[in-house]
Length: 514
Image (cartoon, rainbow, N blue to C red):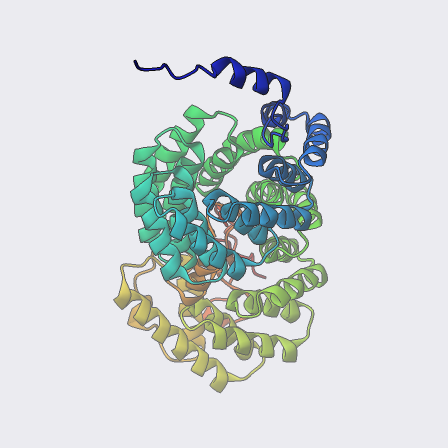
């Protein structure tokens, strides 16, 4: 006979009820409440719950530490947040998110090299994270390792296409001075995100920099369609109108911008140059001085102030502002040329000669420098030096004509012909076709290249270069046709600056001579 095994279930249940298992603290039991307070931005309540949670868990709750570090970083305590994120990385060494936050804090502290090392460690844990590749590319940009930055940003785009990645990739090409590649990148970005006003504005500014006004107007117009209050696009559109002489329309645009960014130096500079074009010189100086107050180290504003004061025959003030501009742009020949104008009219001939010599040394393409210098030397009775400068003018003009189809300012041609007759060298064939404004608008001079390479897109620093078409007192003898006077009013600088940053396009401005 088989005996049945006794049933001990009741006994087991009785023992369990009488002797319950010891309670251990649940590390994550209040994580939901911490998360709720954080997303509601109720940071004080969130920190109170975090403090309670960390006391219960003896500082071992990873999520509570993580959120506390995020709050500290939002409050500006970057170093403290870094230490807490490092604690999270110790508690969970296989978490790529913790390493990403450590690298982010290092980046905010300016430790870009250390940040790249941590991001590379995070990439080993998660090789398909768009954010890691993108941030690595940004770190390499700050380290000026542009090839590595491009590789990382391209990898990020393969993983996931984002507007921000396109913008950073375009920025690299602009930093390298390759505007064409930057345009290609931004065109792809606009195809991917056609309603992104920042991309549209940046692309429009790049076309504006290259002088492709139709496409520039198209993209800026699209940006304004999606965001009528986009002040960058409005400012750029206004500068295009300003460059084409529509001063009143441009001022109407600038009034809209003034409501959005009343303390913008480029805005007040452009307004000042609009008044300059309308020959309202007192209003121009007032606006330009406000721009100078807002941006005292902007050489373009100082340049334009010097230009306006020269036009008003206030030569001491012009000397002051042009000298200040030269301190910021010591390799720009046009500044020395305008400074020589002021010195000539202040009867400081020796320093004027030095300024012209420096201008001729720095600017190897602009014949105006040598022409003005030749006039000064002739007026001082130095015919041999004047002849040498005149020959240099002809050489530069010949090179410019061979390089591309140029148009020359008739006033400049007339002055050169008179000077040639006075020097008894005849009227050279190079001057026999007086056509409209040349060297001022020619966009391939060495000085304009320098200006273009040193100005980033995406910043919108609206001004441009004003170039003088003639800059010395001319008192040629009666045999040369009397005194030559240039009466053409100054024209305007052109938008933009750049982030992002874009370089201004050139526009001519001519000084009235006596």
